[in-house]
Image 1 (cartoon, helix red, strand yellow):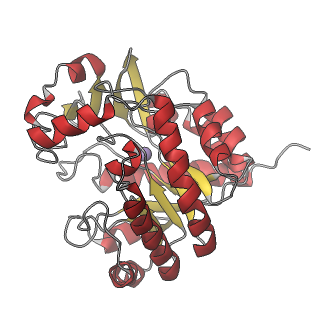
Image 2 (tube, protein in one colour; image 1 turned 90 degrees about the horizontal axis):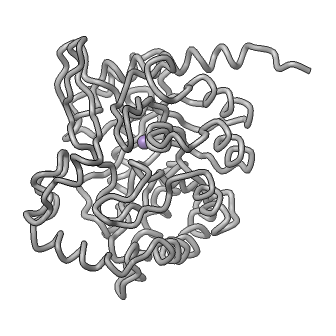
Length: 351
Ligand SMILES: [Mn+2]
């Protein structure tokens, strides 16, 4: 396992790369070219510049998270082949620049969704929280303005058109569209030396009546079976999958990991507080619903050697910044995870 940290790039991330490099055991950076519009090719020179910045800080460019998948691909619309070609080209460029893992997701319209980005806890920290009943009350008729974290991403007309387009897309249809996409990009990823790692849906259930499919153990199994190639794998996100108590995370790691299909791990904790209701908690097992030691034990057992990141953290010590993406609590998370990993690595496996 190699510890990594998400960094939004020189223009968007207030955290200096050097600070990230000072976290004990930090090995790599997870980054993206957020300025490239969805559907366009990620240029090789821009990727190479990002790599150079990262390497100057003594780190490696471990993962691209994410190249967004155009809605036409998810909807299976006429223009999808053009967007798939652009996606293939971006994957080739990742390979040329030497980025080994591409994390992506296949969630219709919205990816991660929360109802509050700064819920305050008794110790003065803040964290992201989700309450399904509260989400259902959010009015999308004015666009994404009332959806925390989405701001002006979609205006009213654009969002209404997309929601309408998805009305005819059942879960099975979404699976078909995902298969169509993977059949065309997995061979390119394989040739380019890039591993694809789908991020599970966050949260792992339908929101606003939209289909969501990457939510459970059977779904991950179906995903890896869609195209039988090592390049077709998953990002194991404990916070996303762990929001549903039906998911047995260590068992899922053993099943998918033993196939060699876990290419990236997001290890954060969530505390489930009710039906489809949770908050993002401190990383250690005792504070959340995810038994982090057992998840890491399973990853260790299946020989996981890919990048891991602490994913999100709380805001602590007066830090302000992008919700979930402060320096301090994520650094504590990374250190905790590395501590668990060291203990697992040095404990002899019983004969
Ligand atoms: Mn995640």
